[in-house]
Length: 407
Image 1 (spheres, rainbow, N blue to C red):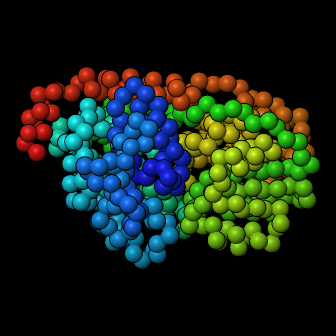
Image 2 (image 1 turned 135 degrees about the vertical axis):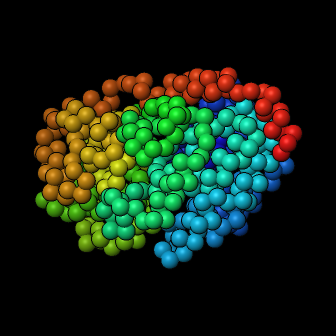
Image 3 (image 1 turned 45 degrees about the horizontal axis):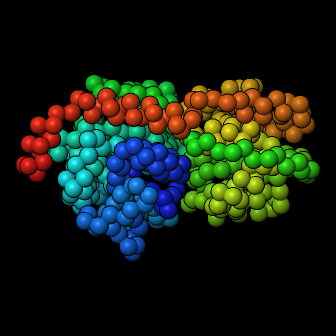
């Protein structure tokens, strides 16, 4: 597996998802992970992988101005230079190719590759190894991965350099593409990506987790868990709570990102709003135990929204913006409600209704908790294995051997 980040270096749900499926798959298969490490860390050499359980982890620092892990903290003026080297990084190509020659995998499964560049695909292709790519964001279409302009508007007319970037993405050769939502499948097709490549819709899975015991409080507790970036729309949520005439309301914001300091300034005059930063799982579960409702206020088109099924697992209804794949996860009036991205007034109104209608809130909570195999990680991994088996069965062992000897 190839993933630009892997625990303990985590910025979002994708890295944790990769770790979860790797651990599940390693029970029956040999799994190796190629990932990055921030500058100055003890990097793994090709000949000496880090062993974590049954997985072999190859960490390295791709030669560039900085690591993808630190991307959000870097000044805007230097990012175009970083992106230039991230289009196709020869150092990544050499490292990944050496690992693949050492491991000789039947398939390569590429997840997020920002910070590693498209050279990861070239390395596998040059060795004749089938490639599956799971699309977690807009890496193939937008260098920023959000499809938003600097003013956070939808990018309708891309810059000429972005058009070149998309042209290069269309040249990537894959065996199969997995997308977590129907929205993302349609997005790939709308941009003309991989027209002749099998595209599979497979919602992401989550680990089965014991439901927390609900704790009764005298407050109306609103929860946000996720990245603190402008595209996530946390400003909308903060302003909605500020407009909520409810003294016992509490907004709990959990996450890290480039926008944290600014959001703290925006929220500092309202003692009902608490920004925690990153929280360990046990502390996060305590917030799950008191949360009345969770909010996913994204202003960009969410490719999936892994946090939503995690909320449902704990019986927490969700208010989400009508953006991207979120309408596929939230059934309006059943396990939550949808509102237009950035609509502060609409979100405030929904929060006001739920805070005053305990019967409705209880019904939404029951519906959210209803069991579903759609997001069950065990089911998800079995489907992945079926995809792997199908792709591997098409592979020519003679082609692999010939390419391995040539390279």
